[in-house]
Length: 136
Image (tube, rainbow, N blue to C red; front, side, top):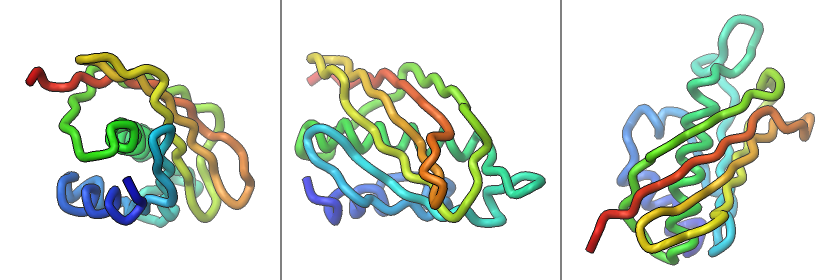
């Protein structure tokens, strides 16, 4: 799957409130997916800190697309678990989420994601998620 194909899936199949974050697929392959969002006033709390809801959404979205990159095509998945650890406040110009598929079974996919703030290059959150693939 190419970044352009993944971006098309993102732009046509994800909810408008996810797209309001302006996510851009910067890379994707069978092992990972990377998304970047700009830090804007719309997603910041007092002091310019990015809200936790935004970071969890970005991580979940990147991990869903990593599942598709692993499969090489659009596949429907449902989030079963999502665990996010916030390491430090998110601030700067943008945030990149880099997601990886750790294991993909017949019905379940396990993923992890690291969120990094730019330009500092500091990791600001870690996330793991489990996804279910529909039977069939």
